[in-house]
Image (spheres, rainbow, N blue to C red):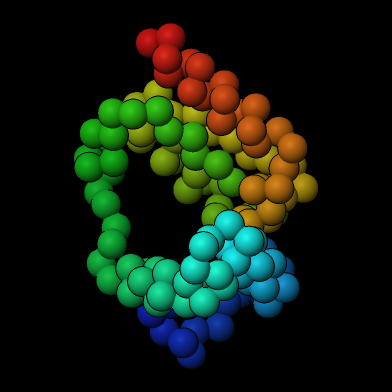
Length: 130
């Protein structure tokens, strides 16, 4: 979030390799184009809205997060820029949340993992049984 709010902020050397690369953003744009009737141009307003969100006071308190009453999977890659401690905290704060850390995956790379559909299906099946 700091990088979004302060363009002059330089991330730590440990964080840089974990951040999405220009190729990651290009791949995301191509994927968006393939799946969106508005084409890749439709992604520009979405990214502007995301930037506005990240630059706002968009955070939620733990008390608010603890009221989530639906199935949640906190999902990160083992090479994600989201720190594992944060993911664990989120999973412990959201009632009955699942935590998944997918191997050999970045933040965007989790979407390409072959086990992801099965994890989502397991979460849905588990929720339907409740």
